[in-house]
Length: 165
Image 1 (cartoon, one colour):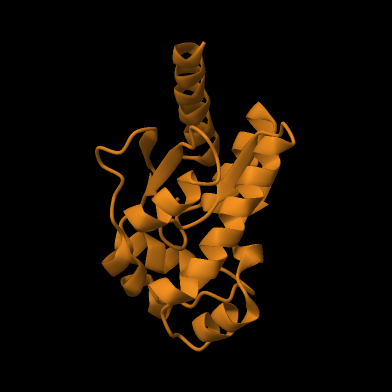
Image 2 (cartoon, one colour; image 1 turned 180 degrees about the vertical axis):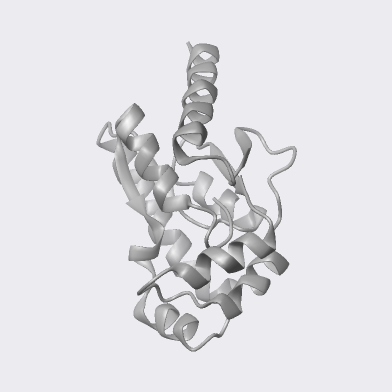
């Protein structure tokens, strides 16, 4: 989880490659109205995100019921968004990819073909509620190489699994 440009998709892909599971790319599930709004540089509201979050929670539930380990790449900027996703899966953990705003702006400007313009980065930081103190939340420096982040996540996940056994 994290703001635009923090590396959610790249890190999720690396985690799936390392640990296995099914990648759920949150951006794919945005309704066209949300995508159109973001393309126009208009930040999404809580209401805009509600159906999207419910759909992602359903994807998590479906994966869990099918015995699949799911890795979701999703902004989940606010605690209530994360709580909504937690309703879809038991023991859902969050990896917060912490990135400075100036770096997020730089990365978003370099992306080609993505619907999220750099003009919305500030709104993402305005909405961001860090998962400090939340259960099953790991904060990682998003400036680290993707493989180093995936290694941190794998170690964290192993500790969580060991406690669950």
